[in-house]
Image 1: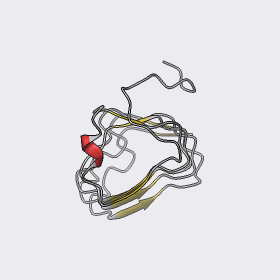
Image 2: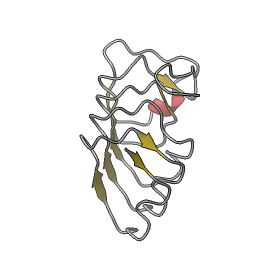
Image 3: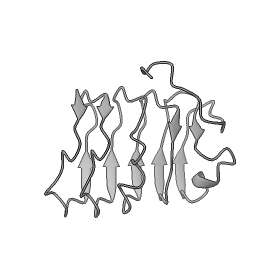
Image 4: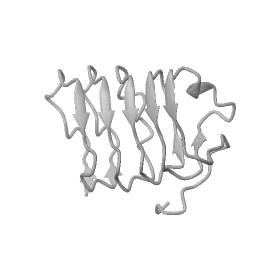
Length: 126
């Protein structure tokens, strides 16, 4: 199952979106187009191993992001207050320094997480 480009067009005033346990495995580029007021996004308990390149830029107002229980290995982060990445693979950020994670006031990282350079995801096709 996938979320197609502009799937939520017209829902511009949406503040909370819960997509947990929905079977979604793929998010297309611009999947969250027009959700400029979205504050909380829950995409936990999926089989996501990759997010679209425009993910953090397309959600400028998101302050709480739940991505726990996925198979993510990489995320470009933006200014978040709460970030849950627990129960994912070894975790990488776009910035090897981890500077992007410093803005989150509450984080839950994988048990054995480490910041590293971007690596290809072995579970996803190239």
